[in-house]
Image 1: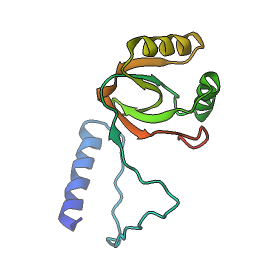
Image 2: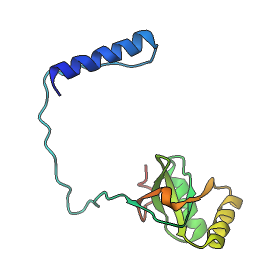
Image 3: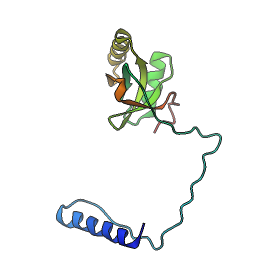
Length: 137
């Protein structure tokens, strides 16, 4: 980033703080650091989000609490995935074209007290097909 661009960013931020009363701060770097990319190791899974496709998706809001993923997995006796819907992460319980199966799964989880949604799966992005309940933060 050039020095001019950094000065412009600081000016905009100062305006936002002074006029709009937005909280914020600016950090001026001493020197621009050279950033080098590190290739992913063979052990780390590649991040490759994919659209889920047509049908229905049953999603559970886990409220950034991995223990909820463990509870859902225990209740259903199956693994769950991780998806993005409306720019928020959710647990993917089911992706199907069968409306009755989707509705049944939705009702089952809702009756158990989970915060469940039944959505159009065309609007869902698959982040991981399986999650470990302790590693989804």
